Image 1 (cartoon, rainbow over the protein chains, first blue to last red):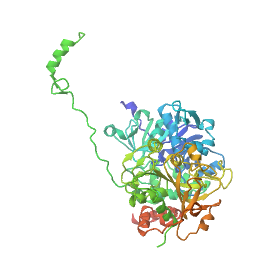
Image 2: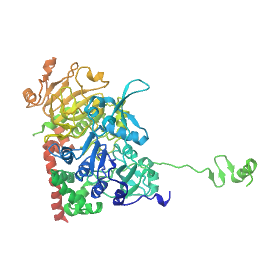
Image 3: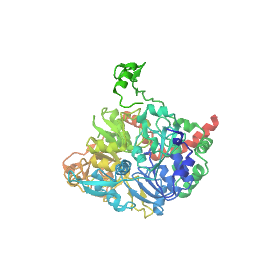
Length: 346
Length: 278
């Protein structure tokens, strides 16, 4: 790999370069390790008319709606962290008809992403969906939400979903190298298929590490570098959600958010303070520490539970000290054979 | 000592998991039911969640369905797609425990919207959506439902996940295995008649009457006696179980609403104490 493959940049650069108005956006992390730093930047840059195609979302969806970045939502789950009494931006926007929503289940949603990732045009899904309003009520996807085909082998009815290939995917991971090889662990959810279905990918990570470190544990790589457009080092990039090995959910901050955003106006005020008035993630963290001290963040740090080191191993070489173990010949003997069997003159 | 009805609900739900079973847990209360079962009578149960963490041994509640840090490791790390296909679709999921928001008499679930789907009226609001519920309810060998803040209705506002559909043989005719085997609310335990598939009251919580339950149900509720069975008196919880649950999640002893209120106050508390100490 040469230096042209270095994809390291700031989130600000990455979002301005790779997220366009009208794009279909997939925040790929599944309820966990939400790429909040990238989401905040998308809102700060006031991207418009996005289709949020997300397997499941928590506050990042509310923020994107509150920031008037989103006009369509395709999802299986929107977390109501504030409980039943909490009326959120999604309800308000649906009532005001500023967004449209299409409901799937987690499985049918990830099946659309997987079909897109595999380069297929559709994917069969489990047939429970057919008995429910998820199948019957259709909005954004219309006729193409689901179809029923006949299995060519068994003749049985099979519900299928279309492939989905979002324009841009955003994800937060533990670590990546400068080429974009992204390593992720904890709860895998729908991240892999969500990310591989996208046309462009922005990866934020807690740490950019040496390529050598990635090679020692390739099974942790969820997205290969050649699919990634931007790598951004952003410690606490998923705060207030959690990231295995780094930090736990900041429950206090999430409850504080829910308690402070009960109306559209209150949400705008919250976003002004925590998103628009902040230059970047560093500024957000400084502001947090200024308001609440470092203590809540320190409380979030997780205990150590180290993965066992395994031996990936690499082989002994064929040639050692001028002797080839593969054919049991000295170099001298070998060169004699080369002279004997060679076909062309040098 | 006082206790919350939710605590007895969780203890009752945990008994639906048998030792050695593969049990899929849904968001919220099911986490605690799975953990309690594993601690008490089902140490060999395999507990997993849709986010792909298989064989969890939870020491406290998951903050969400995808929270990896509340179990000290787990045995098998896969993606959501593999949970649904290689486990549920292949018939390896013995039981799933799911929370419901709206339920009808056949155990069909609405977890998408209360009121009109298009949120046309002021009173309409979104629930969380299906998440994993649709296919778990549709394809696991048994479904155990819990209802806490929700309601029973004659007709669901939106059918998110299948129970016994229209009763009788309708679920089998649709080609679906499994089906709801139990429903636990804050007042009692319900089961489903093997022929009609209609729910009936099978067990009653302490300090609760059949009339209390009838008031919450808009149809003429059947009780165990209607099917020649005995209505079970569910005993109050054991102190050790309550202690486990409160360690697992302090919300259970005081209600989630009160818990969240305290959480929201916690940051300024940190702020004041932090400022004093620095």
